[in-house]
Length: 412
Image (cartoon, rainbow, N blue to C red; front, top):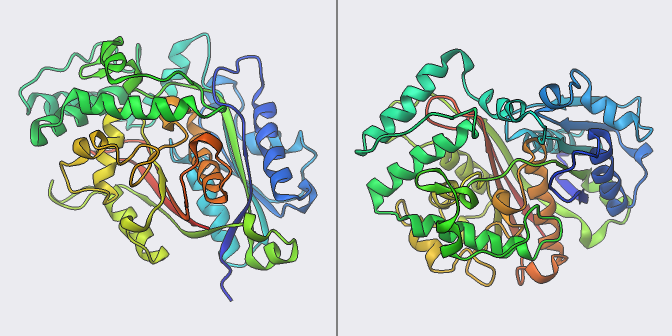
């Protein structure tokens, strides 16, 4: 009989600049918190899926980062699978852990994402992002960004792309100006996303940035790549997040009770070469599949954690996830619907923009936030009556879309 996966334990570090803390220590803090939350001992784990992206370039740790982190906790013998899938790394580790539970292979599995991105040599940090595109076609990637911007009557200054800033900020800049041209979206609407997430982040003690910002503050900040200012771009960061996933049978046996959060669906897919611009794109396709597997629609969701690597990203994902019609993302954020107290609060954690974005940890950090929301444990940022949560996490860039994208639906 197919077992539904249950999130029985969740834990994470504060995200931020942890240059003085090693990768093993960050992973260990999150894992121990998740184990304690589940009320189990590490010796009860039957397998572990360990997500990391940048250790090879930041710390020099290659090949066995998962085994290295777990052995420090005294965990051995069990299968350890190292996962790397761009910014969707942790979500991929989580999806794989859930799949092994639902297939009946294991009863207790750990999924962990952990990352260090801060380094005195910024080129090392930026290389982790630049490597998430086709590096054998870098000229083509830059030419496509330029062509997209020119098509809306603008010029893109790509000097410094990938060296003075993450290459992805230039990709998001292209997304932004296209949306502005096609739908009349404004900089003020993008800034409203950042201001909203800054408010949410100010309520989150684990967020990297906890200062509230106004729309005016966001617009007055340093420009990164017009129309993006600094608060419209996710920061680099260090941190870790972990989840203990169990079968229904084991959750009953261990009396997890109402603290167990059901994984109603967890869908992972990769981009493809679209036949035309009108063809449905990856986020909408994956979201549709996740909704169908969970037996819900976007109108049923209580709260969402999505991949706001930039402010325009969040606004555009509103539309992909079916929260509003194409072109209405700007109006949705301005209406207050996606703010705490609104119809569908988005990124109550502060999102990537304020909670931070340690690449390999982000996806499971979303799961931690939603798990706590559905349990009613989120304090000042609690969504009243939260019963269904959705996480969307994309990574990499090939052609004109994400290389990998995961959507997960959790239910109380």
